[in-house]
Length: 141
Image (cartoon, rainbow, N blue to C red; front, side, top):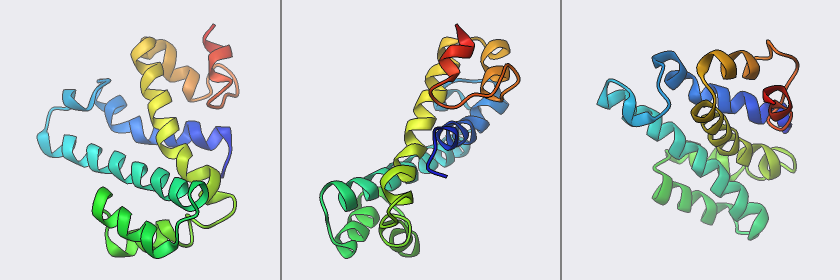
């Protein structure tokens, strides 16, 4: 799952609630609880990215990574253990897939701000040809 396609798919998934409501920004969602839910999901993606960085970029021990995730990203003890352990320390998932969550989310959000829905949605869903997070630009030219 550590692919350019997975990065696009995570971006689509994390933008789905915005797409469903026809908005491009979290603040435009009609309900404050819905906005908070989306922001918490994004915070968890930041926790995944931080887990990857602390584990592979800085070589921090699992217990320290887990404590940081609990403190700074509001994840549960169980989630912190998973992100700092089995996922975060996996040689492929931890190094590449965890950062893909937020990167894909930001890229899809940027594309949705740049292009009208009737152009970008068919493109990201593959209706204009097979795409991933990088090749999407070729379809949109």
